[in-house]
Image 1 (spheres, rainbow, N blue to C red):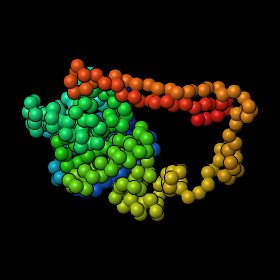
Image 2 (image 1 turned 90 degrees about the horizontal axis):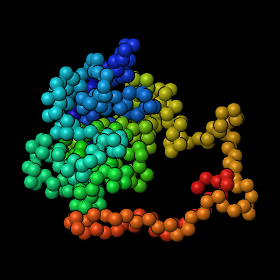
Image 3 (image 1 turned 135 degrees about the vertical axis):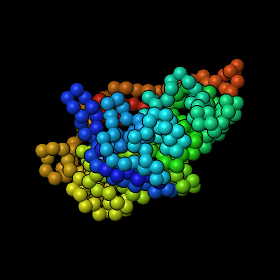
Image 4 (image 1 turned 90 degrees about the vertical axis):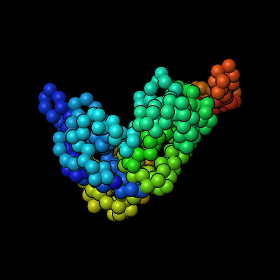
Amino acid sequence: MLDVRGLRIGYRAASGTRLAVDGLDLKVAAGEITAVVGESGSGKSSTAHALVGLLPAGGVVLGGSVRLQGEELTGLGERAWREVRGRRIGLIPQDPGVSLDPVKPVGAQVAEVLRVHGLATRRDAPARAVGLLAEAGLPDPDQRASQYPHELSGGMRQRVLIAIATAARPRLLVADEPTSALDVTVQRQLLDHLQEVVTTTGTAMLLVTHDLAVVADRAQHVVVMSQGRVVEAGPAGRVLADPRHPYTRELLADAPTLAARPPRGRPGTAGSAPVTVPGPASADAAPLLRVTGLTRAFPVRGPVLSRRRTRTAVDGVGFELGRGETL
């Protein structure tokens, strides 16, 4: 589905062009997930944004080839890119807080994709958008469609982004750290949904992530990047079980869910010496913070503007926190 060869990406500044990605090769097959991993600044997100022609200001593709179903994408003009984005390649950005329009209901933002690509009329796009939100696992989608991003939780906003990215049924999904800010339960639900899309529709997915546990659980292939270069690539099972490059071995050793070794301790300590955690000043000391019966409710608009309901978000929560403690 996607064939990238020798991709070079740079960022122009007054002092010259800084190379961010140097000679990247990767392939993503239909119905499979290929993961790109590496430390911050390794070039992962630059690669993801270059694949949809959305490099930030100063970013430029300096060379190489990007082919989608055999068609070359490098060198496309903005008008041609608009036919590719959303329709053939869907992007799931990292941060829904800055990726969604804060002054437009989320249902309208999903419907916009359908209308831009001629997949729905202005009349039937809102209903289609509600269906896409439901498909992405958003609870009460008819109600949520009329809400604004700030009225939704982080996981709900991420589901809206997934609905937007999959609305036009693209052949390739580029997911840039799609679950980095979510709790593990919501993370698994979203990954389950994305994997179902891939396996049932034959969509290819490029997953940019720093989470090696997600790679081990979801990806068929993995590309390891460091300082803008690919240092290792291959089937995920082989790379994770038998890493050949020192940097890959270091990544795996530092992943607490994958490394089968004791903690190394703090700098300056020997081996795996335990870290001492200070406790409370005394067992009888009064708590620094005491919360009892905390309840918080929010008014919620119903499908009809005149109907307003209340949703309880916190109900009867209580806890204590002592000095020197972490809760």
